[in-house]
Image 1 (cartoon, rainbow, N blue to C red):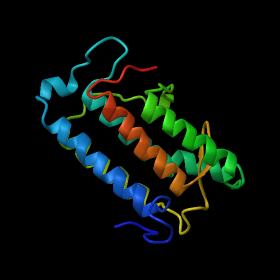
Image 2: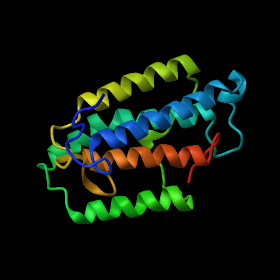
Image 3: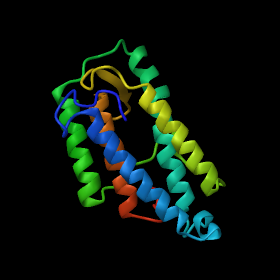
Image 4: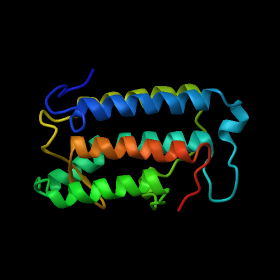
Length: 178
């Protein structure tokens, strides 16, 4: 299914996070499909996103990773992934998934709204395919430049993607912007 399958242990390799992110994506889409169409698009309160908006936000992140964040890494001269970014990404992933910590949303990841279930499914499938196609040969090589964590490998970024989906599932269906 994925590049780098078996290239590292299941906990750190690309196959592990990709499988986890794929399972979580299906959970999100199943929950969205179970909601009436009007409820999917309804913003529950000021400062919150609709359920469809949450899904669009998750898609926007997957669309941004192989494009903008890779371009930032290349512009920075491909810095090395270091233990500091690994430790920081693990701490923040833990804090987000275990404590419900809210992290400000980057402007490029704000949902625009108005997309229905079919459009969201198609767009997420396309984004995931582009993400997988952009994976490097080595799961430990610098892959993207995260705005807060610095250079991350595909394995590190993948764990953050899976944690990000888990975070939004815990707050389903609406996520108040921080």
